[in-house]
Image (cartoon, rainbow, N blue to C red):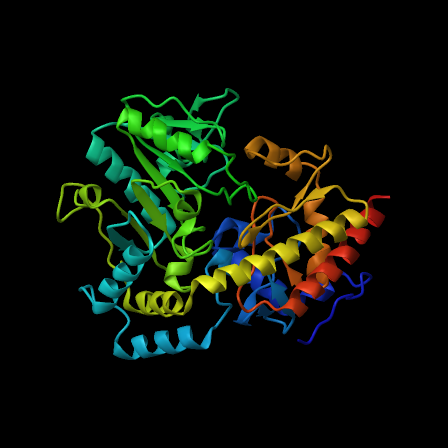
Amino acid sequence: MTETVGAPAGRSEAEMLGRRSRDLFDRALRVTPGGVNSPVRAFGSVGGTPYFVASARGAYVTDADGNEYLDYVQSWGASILGHSHPAVVRAVQAAAERGTTYGAPTEGEVLLAEAITSAVPGCDEVRLVSSGTEATMTAVRLARGVTGRPRIVKFAGCYHGHSDGLLAAGGSGVATLGLPGSDGVTPAAVADTLVMPYGVVPEVDEDVACVIVEPVAANMGLVVPPPGFLEGLREACDAAGTLLIFDEVITGFRLSRAGASELFGVRPDLFTFGKVIGGGLPLAALGGRRDVMEHLAPAGRVYQAGTLSGNPLATAAGLAVLGLLKEPDYEALSGRVARLAAGLLEAIRGAGLPVEVPVYRTLFSIFFTDDGMPVRNYDDAVRSASTGRYPPFFRAMLRRKVALAPSAYEIGFCSLAHTDDDIDRTVEAAAEAAHEVVAQAD
């Protein structure tokens, strides 16, 4: 690749970024709220101006100025094979030649549904949608329709999309009724949402339609569930006749072919999937037990619809990815991520910065700490972010052409295209970046 570790720290970030990206951002600010179409892309929590991607291949993205970055965003986990994998590109091209959307059923929808249900035990049927938000929103509506109950339970720090009822923030208590997590979300919209600390099994009563959880939390940094937590949720839901929903939009087909439920030995009633199953195109799904899924229209009375649901380009991309992924790939990727996490931990601590680099199979994150305590829940993640060390570390890595997630609350993604040399380069860059952060603080 064209850039190596050790880009001169003396060059300004503006010089490293380039004029084209700055101009594009200025233009975007005039026509798009905040200059972006998804908030974290604006670099608001890390500072500076976002690079605008012009192209991507494998483990790398290239910006509008020709700068090439070793990429650990990977479209927030969607590109498990790496960017622009030839088989995926060919599948999308072939599908596009036949037409881009029909508003009618296609064979691709059937094939992708068969691929998902055959891989995930307990997922008897799926409904394809266009985004993770649609999937979780529909799963909650379905749970309410099946049970006839109003209330839902979620966990602080778990993100389930931007539908009103799931944009709930917790208060100061151990368990609190949801507070609006965004302007425009009314108290009434979250009045039936109970927010719990991640890792705490709630008391579930007969008013609760569902408990929704990320089985491995990946939206407050990486937080692995404590022993017994998922098992406790299953038991509590069974006792109350409540449905358990695993939000596997990130973890599904990323941790293994069968996802987190198989790894932890806990089977939910409903799943949501996204990212990997769309092969980098807009596609997600909800799925689960047949007797529950059959309540969705037109089989049942719970309504959901979408003009672009099961889009033929997206199903072609998803089928190409799932057709290539084999279980040995997950083991290889897990080993690669473990090596990366160990290297980052040693490199950053070696510079004198307290840090934790949790890893679970193919996922990792970086938590800067002051107390040396592991991050176990959202409050711990907030405390880590409040150290203020992630933004300068992020910018120092970006100067060395390594792109991490532009937020202390996001996780890192390796792809199968990342090589051992890429990992070595990343660790070397992290050591330099950490020393730079320490020097700036002195």
